Length: 288
Length: 307
Image (cartoon, rainbow over all chains, first blue to last red; front, top):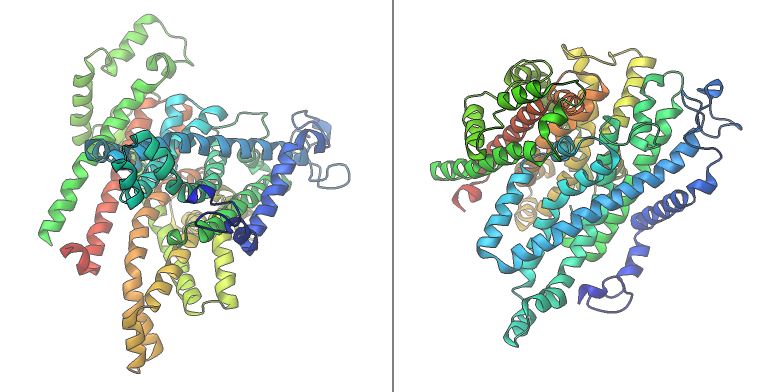
């Protein structure tokens, strides 16, 4: 049963974790992610300065011994802001994906398991929501909730719900036709028990792959919304916001935008590497 | 073919109906009073609030409001912008050309880079070229468009002075935004082209064609690429939507007029009719583009229209 998919040497996919660590791309991604997570967690202790405190006399200092990654137009330390930014970006990504998984999974389970009218209705709603391309649905939700970092998290999460619902439903449709599900039904198991014990484990593998890849997308979308001025508000050190603030100083202070830019790219790259690796190990059918 | 066309077009109707319902509901999902939210920055009298409520027909029964919204939208009337006092359709009309230009040019860049890159990576599988191009593609997928845009501005505008950094209008202004948006989409197209080609290259008919002694490139172009194109065309539709949405960000980076900047400006100014109208327009355009893509690959692949 894939409930133990990550447990080495047990279940129907033995050694998945071992195979993941042997996957060069995934290993690189895991190392980058671990480093980023460590930096994010230790940001208050690692930061050389207060990320918010301004010091106009020290504005636009190039990277050097005093400011490791330079200072911005307000004299704030870019390295300290980037470290705290990692904290915000990772948290935003995790919460957004958690919202999407928490809402999309039950909807997909319900729709796929019961089928019929419930499925018809849910899938029509999903079709409608998928008619809003890319970041547009998140933009529409932000316009309803009004700009702000918390609302961006909610918007990015809600905008991804249809994708998760569809994915889970597809896995359920395959799983519910299995003999062991029919056997459980014949033995009089309740729907909730069947879903929890026999259907859900089949959904976990594709869900983990999609959620990992989705984490990168969520971080990108949230940073994009902050870049547009709809997410984090000054003086919060969020990567998208920092990039936007450095726009006017591209010629004389390239580091203000470059540091958060590299931060976002590395994080998303790491998520993609781990996600690709997980897909190869857990669900090779999804490979493109 | 006509049956397929009719079926595909009919399937769009409920989706578009749902899209209008979703966009219409936006106003009612606002926490609190939407009129007070829209006028929050102004000192208003109760009379002015009542006037705005009447202008938006918020006093009428909800079904009547929705009926009016749909009927007006079908006629091309998407309401009036609260800030500019101009018709939303006029605002869209002035900006749609710029966004369409950007989306088409980016798609051309994406295809010009993505298809050959993916094709060569598949043909030289497991070579340094394959590994290198897929690493580049992975970096492309992970790159934030707004940062790539800024890097483009620094390199090609501020340092080399080849292209203008901001603004819109002529072809010269289009190059940097189109390359920015197109490069990111090309990464996805390259990955898909590679996997699609690899699958087709393993098929029996390709092996048979090779066994018959046909030239290698002839087999690749006439037998393999033709079949590999079907999933690639599918992704065009999805990518076109992503390009429309990506334009929201790239237009802001390059201060270029377009639908994206119209939406963002509308959200920041709490101009709800403008946001609703533009979102409805873009979603409808996306749905219709996908129908056109479906019809396009029914032409390419007879299995789809007869299936």
